Length: 284
Image (cartoon, rainbow, N blue to C red):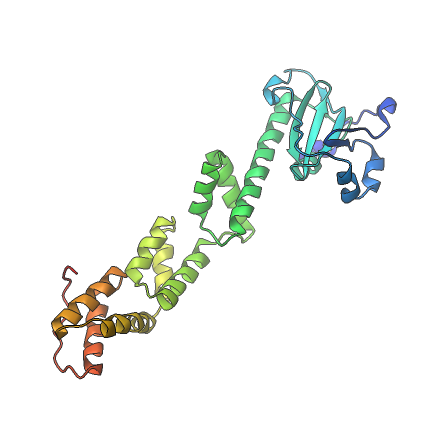
């Protein structure tokens, strides 16, 4: 369909050759407009005017050719245009307008415009996803959920995720590896905890296991020792009480029983306690 739009018929209307301005929109239908800078054009616009006052694409007539009579630039939201077909109009993003050659005189059918409206929805969903990603990296699942909360369809969300993945902006494998390393080495979380977190973020099981393999046993042990030693030093009482409280502390942070036993033995040795019973998964 894109190639078809590239060869659109174009009807010229000499009586409409002057640039028109009205409220929050400016007519960009004539070539002379493009000699202006975007900034100069925006100065003449007022905020908040919507371009779709005709009931949306559903109000467009069936079975006839529809000719664009004007293309109007909105000041807000940015990069949005009102495309008019006589008494009918719809609003699209600049990228969609350019892609489908939506200039004055171009001719479309309603079914073609319905497809353009869907393309515009995907573009808006993509913009929402980029804004969400601008705060910090996200998984494909998180983006899908976010777009659903914003009211976008499952189909639009799926298309956006595919596009972001192709562009390298979403990479669950890289995300999982970065997350695992950060949580274990920097936050004192065990691999069991990290596995649970990544599941909640919608990362697939194979990618989770692959990410956890990038964190060595020594890295996890050193992290556990760092956080456990603070708990051990701040805990009073008999060695058995210190062992129980420190071990429970590590278990709550997602470290395995075998690693907890290793840490407890090491802490006991550092304190000159020659005999520290093997750790058992007890209630805190």
